[in-house]
View 1 (cartoon, rainbow, N blue to C red):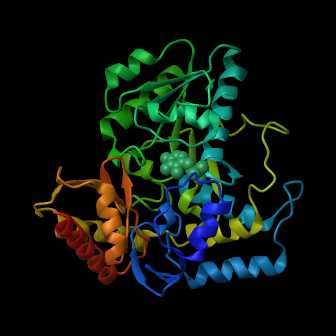
View 2 (cartoon, rainbow, N blue to C red):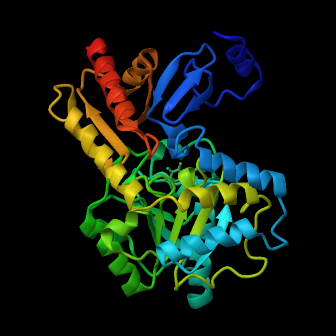
Length: 391
Ligand SMILES: *Cc1c(COP(=O)(O)O)cnc(C)c1O
């Protein structure tokens, strides 16, 4: 253990089970630790560094804004926010944007907006939000309550009331949970932390339909799936549906803490003066970084994402240790042979020079979206080697 690791354990709350690696720098999809060892990055810092490390355009955007003004507060107009909001509305057809600092905060904002939409129109008592079993929506009390996994509903009682969890892809079970108290349905199109499980297209389309019929707010949590990750700017776009609220964070600012909540026609006027606010949300440096990220999510990049996914499938499907591959685009879940544990493969991968993630019992890969074919190919070979060594 290095001194950094010892001091970490001594002074930082022990809430993370860290791997014994201190990452210090990198270039593109290659990361370097304090001893100079190199790794292929299949994590992007959990889906944040979507153009890898030391991306020149991102660095220029951040540095130029830092040299102008680093923060203004939301009491004043701010050009980076305005440029980014305009770009997001143009690219999605959504009507208005609110900026936050994280995924959980984006979802908090969506939850507040959904409840207020209903309160404004129908009065008290219509506040229930249906989310899915195995969903993940964040770590605040409200977003933990929204999260449909029992392991998260411990210790911190009482949780927030008003959340019901439906099984994914079961239209009948979902419909059975809707009653006169329901105000919204919130989904991830691919459940990330819950095991990289994509929803059926028919289920997603049904949710849009039932939300329209019953005047419920249709919320899509694109914190992990969004910003190009699944091969579309936002993953819902694949299905031709139109959510009332889209939340995002993770990759949006290429590795800076930032989030956005996009509001459609139905919800754009719900939150008014004084009804929602944040000190740092919309920070000019983060907004400038996000602009440089979103501006470059074009067909060329999205095609690259799809091609790189196809490469991963070609290399892994048919391997006797790989049972199936799930997810969309460069949000990849790998179901492995029962004799192997995903966490052990990830540890072995670190020894072998590839950084991966897990989701439930799967290996999860979230490589930078612009990862080079050679790096991707080499990293997959290291993953295969790691599984074989454990066999
Ligand atoms: C990571 C994640 C969140 C929480 O985001 P934070 O930035 O950690 O608050 C919420 N929803 C989904 C789908 C996520 O993947």
